Image (cartoon, rainbow, N blue to C red; front, top):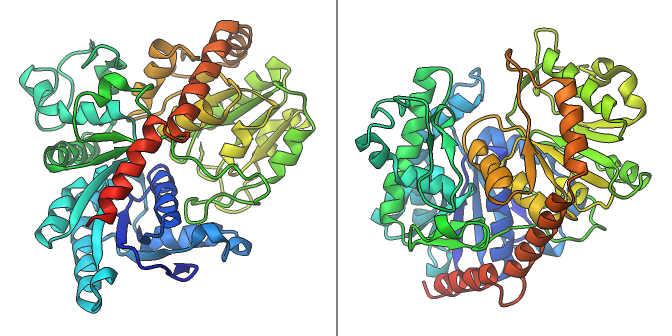
Length: 477
């Protein structure tokens, strides 16, 4: 599938994200930047992910100038047609199947292409697929890593062997030997060992995820470049830990609000843009935005507590409730109506199944962001929001690191505290919203971080210069 005809004669670059929303979007943003410089991009999804993304696309935008030179292709994920595409099964696919399929695809393109500048000159691999860098290398193709997570997350992967040698974790599952706080470098976020990046409730699943981070550790040892969606100002301590780290972020959409949708090929769900008109009807700094990303799951009890807490604040709210977000035996694949659970709150709130988040966060009506602390959401709020403070509710993986950045390093947000049953109560939600919105220092710091982020991607900014240097390197291949 082409996002317009492949044009120009610059090198062909293959880009391979891990099969998840939070991995696809930032790499596709980078793909568009390279395509705008004339590179021809072959962007690789799993077959089912491409099908889902294609359904979500707004076809009216195909043919616009910013989607030239990008070809969408797919590979099998190695899972059976009836197997659930859960996070764990996708991790299994990344570890066991996708490297083989990627090698087949590269070989197939190389064997069917006669002109030298039609051959793949470089493959940009998601760091979670970094084990495939060796595949490209043995075929005489340059391999580059791209990290959709923070540089701090990469530092944790780099230090796995040290953590094992120091007795902090075991070597089989990465399980902590005792509960403690660890901080790998001054200036980096700390993390409780009960919330390590690969920590899961089920040990066999955790072992798979731990293997993924071990693969990242191995790939970082041989990578010439690891492109990082971050900035030097945000993560100077983590970025100094490796000469291969090249901060090029924050990667952002073209801030053209006249376009009806986001960058094509980057979203697994269709965006409901009606929320932007709804936001227009509200005063500046009045709306609570609630979004927990593409993986977080809450049960019905927690859902009701959130709904009640939002009602208690007395403020309007925009809440993203994707299908699958609520864990319930009663939830149906079709016909599920979150407004039924929300009850009378629907008078002051709006629920959408997926939102154009960058446009939402840049809207002047947004007062604060209740978030799972995914790295994409974190960067978007920092870079685009008008000094929007965070209320942090991490779910798993690097989100706990990101929360510590937000609350303890950058000091631009607060975290929720669950009760003895693991529930964040409605009173806790109401109290934290009130406290956050009355903290003028947090808002002041948030505005300063936006200025730093914008400076980094401005002309001659640190990230812009790094990206231009990478483009120059690509052109010389």
